[in-house]
Length: 129
Picture 1 (spheres, rainbow, N blue to C red):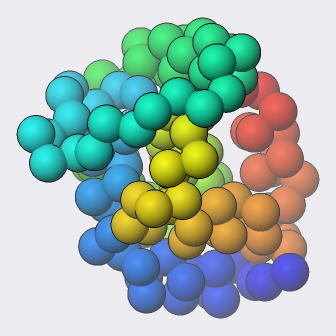
Picture 2 (cartoon, rainbow, N blue to C red):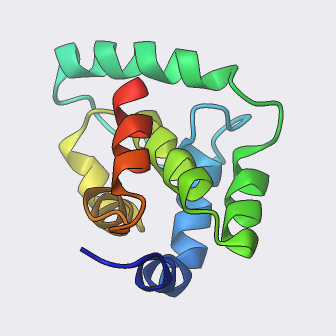
């Protein structure tokens, strides 16, 4: 487990690829860029469940996911950053190809190892989805 400071160091190390992933795959993102790869669905049942959650996330905020990412980074707001990253995970299609997306493995690592102090908050956020 890491502290908030260590966790945000990891976020900052991968800031560019994470921000791009948020911009391209967060369910509330307007439209993926033309360069965003189309991933073949390899788990159809899981994909249906993912789409249901993604549809719920779409209407949760009127602030762009990229702006929420930047604000959470600027303020080192663990709960907001964790939420944006977790929601982005729900925007990535259920495909084994997701592991080829730049930033995806870093996103998963951050979600799997939340800061020690905020672990209960992050668990509550991830289970509310």
